[in-house]
Image (cartoon, rainbow, N blue to C red):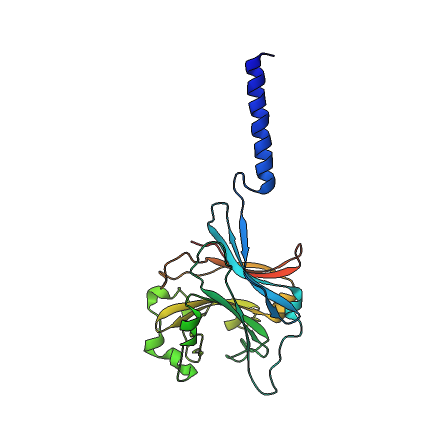
Length: 260
């Protein structure tokens, strides 16, 4: 073998070795990344925010991770009362900037109106587009205010098939737009659904709602989300959401996905 051939072969070996080392550390050819927020105690477990990106740091998912214990020994409402418990979750300190400012889980032990639809134990997973300070300033005189013109979102901010009915104005949240074609509004049991939130005619949150029983069934569920014509806040937004039990890590994930 000539010296030139040996030199070429040596360079090839060195390139292969560098590629192997880079792949071992996840630095070659790119690799998806995950960023996690600080865990918050919930039930007998914890919950935290998860942000996922592809190798180019393009956003692929924002969601909530629940350990199995988080679904056990949750607070109960007093007899005859309807109270919820809020868990405040911070976005990860690292990773891409997103349209989501912060996340809240509202545990509803006896559900909420309308009766025979959402009055079962469930979680409201709120992904807020506004700051905590702005969220705290959301005020209403009564829950029927959502049906008044000043709280009806412009058509371009409301996805097709969604309406904002009276009785959905909630302080420190907003008014709630429901998908009238969802199964729970047509006699089917409520398991999971998707809500858009507004205040003063601007979008304020995105909200998957999921029942406790459905989570405990260890589902593997994913579905498309209807998108509005535009959004109040610049950024990329989900076109799907999923509710899944991940056996390999023994956790539950509620994710917003398909960002565009």
